[in-house]
Image: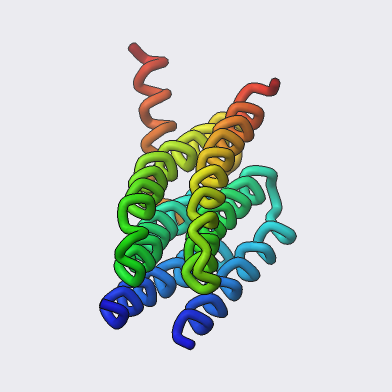
Amino acid sequence: MSEIILLAIICLAILLCLSRMLKGPTAPDRAVAVDTIATITTALLVLLGSIFERYVYLDVALVYAVLTFIGSVAIARFLEKGI
Amino acid sequence: MQVIGTVIAGIGTIFLFLGSLGVLRLPDVYNRLQAGTKCTTLGAFLTIIGVGIMQPCWLPKTLVIALFILITNPISNHALGRASRKSGVALCDKSVVDKAEEFEEYQGRK
């Protein structure tokens, strides 16, 4: 039961970041919001694995963390000097 | 064990919520970046470690994920801040000091 409350708070946090991503005046604002959402989603995946009692979700969270790190660095590189 | 893990995960979740509230409310790219990186790193770390304490046989893999986030999240956010500085995003009106501009002036004078 308590895990459901934690899940609700995390979903509310993702919604707040999503509104900043839709509203943000410049491109780096949106990139920061997307990066924050990616880190929150990693924690959300681990919590979902604990709720559903599935060990596989930890692998999914690890691969998601690696891919979002590479994606953030690529977006930063693109904003700095273009492709 | 269950209670300790739930309390630690709850503290981490509150940190995640406060970090995203800062991303929504703060006035500037750099302030948003600070809220988004500090609160989110600590919050994700505490949440994942809390889940590892709730289910003790998952502890090694959750420790690996938490350490990976602790290392890579500041690096990617530093790259984003540097890129937004280089692409010319202005600071907000209430800012009082701009060390990067002072450093560029100092280098130009030398």
